[in-house]
Figure 1 (cartoon, rainbow, N blue to C red):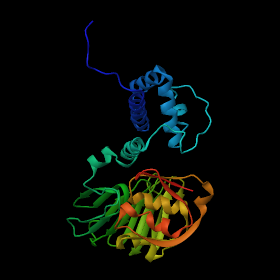
Figure 2: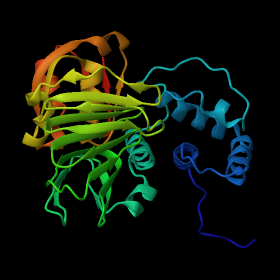
Figure 3: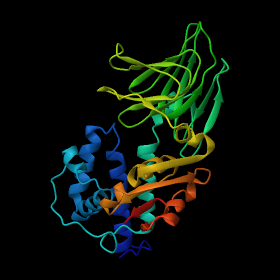
Figure 4: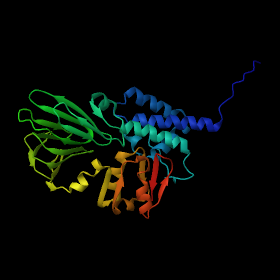
Length: 324
């Protein structure tokens, strides 16, 4: 009999391999361009062994996405009881970090956006750009723009995130900013456009701008100094008066909160740091706080909250934090 020096992988090595495959499948299946062939391959992988099903169920449970398989329609729903965070899940800390990295890449890095963009910032980064007409654009964290300077008009497409515009007046070339839900037209002014998940926010520091609904261009609103408005598919919010200290705080390197729910504070903070924050105790989401957070040290941006709030923060990894 011919001998071989090749050793079989241990049980723990096999489990680690399966866990890594589950993370890779979870990250891939959350993308918007998954093909039928990939879904079929995933379904085959899922049926190969109960260990595959278990690993995938655990990563879905970990990320609160138990409806993923149902939405894909590629696997039968498996009934299981909810497990605790500590001791019951096979995912160890290094793998959790790998999961965070994979998911952050999927959700925060849009390759198509980066290919289109003329200027872009990473998470926790900011950049000031001087355009060829003399106008300035300051990009906030995780933001991207596409610029076109023509003879008759100047256009900027906000592909992602938030930007502050200081526009040089030019009566012959209006300055137009295209957001997801809005079109903002100006001649010369200073204003912000923030592209959120389901709406655009336009805030004017000085000057006048006309904001149109991107889908119903006949609908518009005129904003003046310190006016702000939110735009979505349904239309416009009521025009509100800005607190300039709050509006401009990120330009000065801070986030300022006044009587804001902790969940909304975390949502804002997450724009400036990598990783995921999860609420274990849902009642804490509406906990009201006031304060100021320094943006110059993204790696320790949560510490201000941890040091001032009587709320437990559990750091499973540098990328995964649980509140409550």
